[in-house]
Length: 267
Image 1 (cartoon, rainbow, N blue to C red):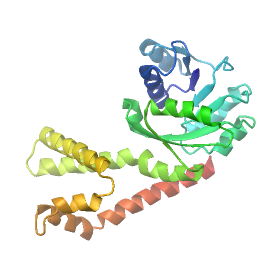
Image 2 (cartoon, rainbow, N blue to C red):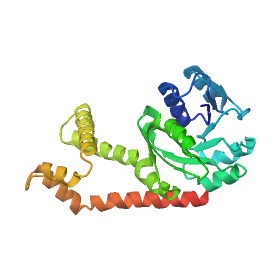
Image 3 (spheres, rainbow, N blue to C red):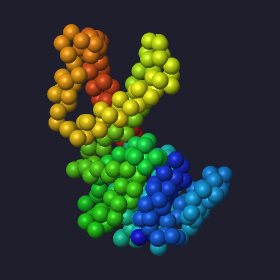
Image 4 (cartoon, helix red, strand yellow):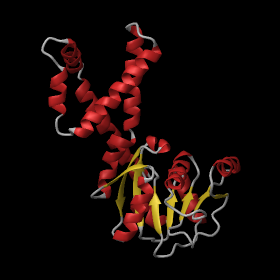
């Protein structure tokens, strides 16, 4: 399996590191195209793969992972030769539909559209993906292995679900960063050091996430186990409800989903 990554930014680099780190491809079977000379030089110095500054030959690569910024896609597409029918395009560009990719690539049919989130840069990302009907089961299996090198790959039933994924897991790390930021602030206000508050919050999140993963259908039960009537947790939950935190959180995600749809229409 030979993989060409088009775009050596943070996400392209993350997938290159993950693919190399998992031994998914043989040495010499992964290359990166990065047009910015300084960035290309950095990647050459840090990664054990070839890095070129122009597209050049692509016919020998079965999988092409497009990791450029959406606004740079038109220029990239114009620089590519016509792809062979058996090459598979994997796009991690936000807001660029399969139809637009197909049109820009002269009608190429085998396309997989993905939505990774930021933790892919540490190999713990969530990568949801949808495929065009032309992608075969064997091709999809290998593409899923490529994506799973960066974390957990999740297959979608249809491309129409990508906007919800963008709002939920694509933007999701920012919601959690925001929550941690506010919890840190109040922890310090209540007399803890920032180091103490950070340690307490992060370990609480890890432990709670592990419990949710182990018992995914018991959220209300687990919450009730911590929420004694008239106790400290109940006082906090009641304040959250009075402030409309639950509905505000859902409205925020809905707004992100709506914006994702708008951006897709504009692309």
